[in-house]
Length: 433
Image 1 (spheres, rainbow, N blue to C red):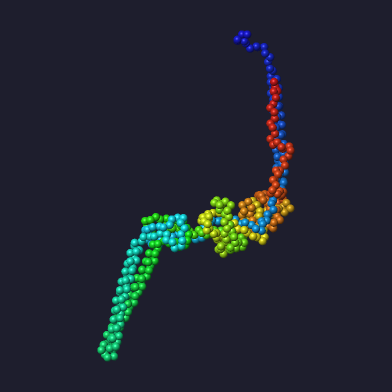
Image 2 (tube, rainbow, N blue to C red):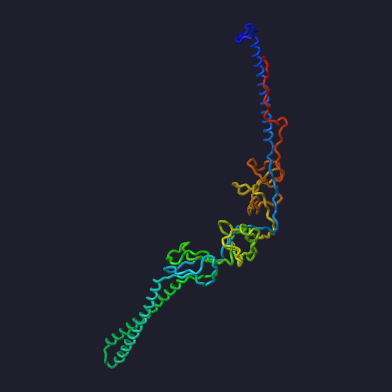
């Protein structure tokens, strides 16, 4: 065969009519496919509209749950923090330098025990000066007493010579005035003695503050100064105290009782305290010691003190935990899911269902239990409370009811709409060949 073979020139020619027919066939095929696809989409859209209309006409589906009564004995759990029975900061009362300290943090001290000493030379010098002033006042008083006795005796002698005419009345008046002045000088010197003695007593009292002693038995929790530090009583700010002393043999915990429980807790009632971060599962027993006697006007709670014996030192001041009260109620309290609450202009409300018709009910809530909440007033216990209120719910609306323990079934789908998007049509065949 030759490499440069020429193309045959006698091939059959395709007529113009055949080309036109082939083009028309392809166009008709595409038109048929378009019409079929359009009719399918339109039918699917109409079915969705019918389904949406059916769903819109159906009553809303709500979950209901009956209020659950609590038992006659119930645990009231409140947060609490352990604090010392008494705690105080010990400041200096004199200017000086820390001479020595005898205890450090963590030390247990007894009442009246010496904790530290302050060296105050200025105060000591003032006391010596005041004592010298007392001696000087005593000496002045002796001289004044002598002058007064002499003036009084002279006056009496002159008075005895008046009848004989040996002295004039003017001489007598002069001696009388001198005696009065001597008496006044004597009184002034006596007062000076008392003033000097008072100064000594004051300085002696201040000198007593050079020794820092414990006002009560407890544990040293803070020591802020070392030997040689300048001590000043003019800076009583927190953190500038010499020591901080806390009585930890007995601890107290303050809690705020809600108003609905204040009549169910009484003095000497036993309570328990748990600090799970430190003692998992361990309960410490205490008692209700006292309360404020009046509710706080802002929080409507009663400030209550609980006392716990801590002689073994297991509890530490500042520990945070939970206090449990055993509450005995004559009438059980109802609880509902927290999700059932509605807050609006009418107050706190819930929705109840009566013969598949909803009604709004005002309630008064009690303690918040997390997923549930107590209802103080507003429910009798035989209602069906809607646990999932929505925006479509208004007074008197007809609803479908399901129990909150059951799952809400989805609305039925028409069988012909099981597949939302129909498959695309098959591609056109090889017509026109």
